[in-house]
Length: 500
Image 1 (spheres, rainbow, N blue to C red):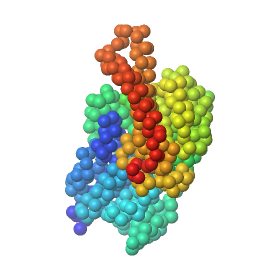
Image 2 (image 1 turned 180 degrees about the vertical axis):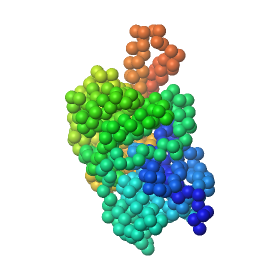
Image 3 (image 1 turned 30 degrees about the vertical axis):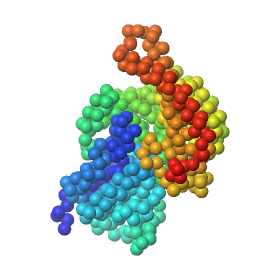
Image 4 (image 1 turned 120 degrees about the vertical axis):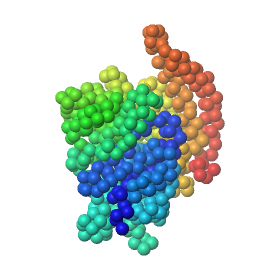
């Protein structure tokens, strides 16, 4: 029976860039890092593995082709838990996962799935044909499960921590498995399984540079009450600076990326870590410009921003969320609006770009709170902004507060959805229009700011700057009408999308 199989394990994930129109237009694809870690972990344990990379696939038909080509015994959907879009559990990707499970079952595979959505909703995936669900982090549970299924280990299924499966018609969940602490013991992601030439070609064609993704940590110890943590909970583990630098040096030798995105929820909770990181990058000649995520309060420690600068930070994305202290306090964010202002100024003083994550729609938000956020953006003019709407995910305090006011649909369909999933102050149409208004105001101001700086150096003017001026003029001229529409929508009933 086993002779017909070519591969022990085919690993994939269900985030298809093509199924997310907003991100498809942006076209900034990154390999599925979490899936690559799992592949490397299984390979180190002696399993023959292959990768299906949904990120650049045309659709689920490509998964079917990979199943036919590799003929695996085990089909594993191991979601990239470092990708915030996977953590959002988008409905379009859940639909894709169900199709992938059915296709793998039709090929006679044992199907194993793991990720944020699977951990939150194991019964849904089991009812759609998955044989086992990995609850939480995944790598150790996956290996233990395979070892039992392959007869390498005699541990009963019920004694394997961190899995769920059906017993009759009931879902049986075993004891939780603690997250790994020694991240340096993990093998480097299985980069060799990635079609790296295709990623590089897309990046250089669309953006003139090639970017890859890495992580230095797992988890986040802070307590923002809207933040879902189904994989690592409140646990936080960090790789050593040397381990990270060695991987950067390896990537630099083998793939020559121009840029790195550190996908950590927070990079460098300890400023001493960042200092050592910067020192080792100097010693190994491994600098690669990067973007990372951080908090305003952590950035204000005396050594943090200088260390980030020395390490090569190009842009820092800050979880600003709101310019209203009332909203930050309601979120249990633990930061002050004044810290956002100060951290932004200090980053700019050190020549580091700064970008804001903004979140609208939180409980109790008023037009006055929204105005304070817009004022903060205008005052500080970050180099970029990302806008979201408060998104209640299971097992968060925020979810528990609004669960009785939620509509039937509890997830966005894709990343541009911006639906209000609970009864907030304003409705879905208002927040979608607010997204338009904020971007029109910000983009026009940012463009004029850039053009004003260029006016002093006319030799730097390029044809692209004419397009920038045209864009700024368009956004500024259409802003009044967009604001009028927003004002009208503020008077409409605040009904969630699925109730309309």
